Length: 393
Image (tube, helix red, strand yellow):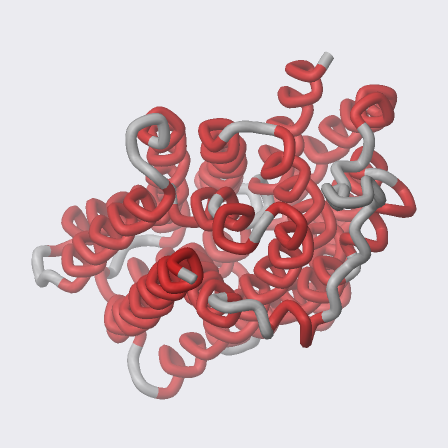
């Protein structure tokens, strides 16, 4: 039963990834019809991210009240409804309206499932779990590209994903008895056996290394989401690629994440979380330099794949290392705030690049990613140093 539940969790993360790359791949075909500037994609992504921040911070309370299974099922249902809303929208303000339930549905399920897996499963499963997110995220642009290349509008691309989400929601509701048998994943205090009370935000921030890991997580999500949102537009504006081809090519980034996480699951058997994160950062740097190189569209496409491969181990390994860095009794609280910081990065940084692209040049896309990467490396190395210092005391 426990392995069947794991399969259900994998399915849930496919559903979580499916809509994540849609906006970036469809936007070159959307903004002209809407009569808005290209930078307005950042507004929609910011609304979605704000919703995820709110629901992520409430995930601990919701999980304790409803259980992980119900939180997951209702969150995916909310996302399905929001995607259908996107598919019937014909103006920018309608997209902004449907972005609210879109974000609220994503935050709770992400934080709740990550915490559940961190507590109950091995590191390899954490990587493979996020590989399943990549399966969904890399499939999204191809589905959108299929709709666009077939002469259909971007609305139909969203509708296809909405239908898939409804099917996945049905599976999740049918699986609810499995979740009840396993509990909600709450941590117990070893000294008294009682359920741990949630830590308040100021208490979490005072934990040594907490600010560093939250900043690193902010940077990671900023880099991943900026790449996912703007890669397609960058290829169209800087290389002259047509919109439907660029939509499919943007999926290469998510394909790199997917393949990388499948491989990372095996590498975690030999390498610890810190070394896996460092390896990922080196590969991201290589990918950014490839995008920067003046060798045309093929090199840019190779760079997107490398950036995706580099992103692959970072997110799951940071999550999995949380109990080791901060203790199992604090991991749930820290993971929740980490998720919130990740969504703040998603909220702030892609729209910021939209302004840069609109008012300066979209050619700064790889430079922007490089600056974020440097800050992420510095913060992660500071976390490792603090952890070592605490361990010596």
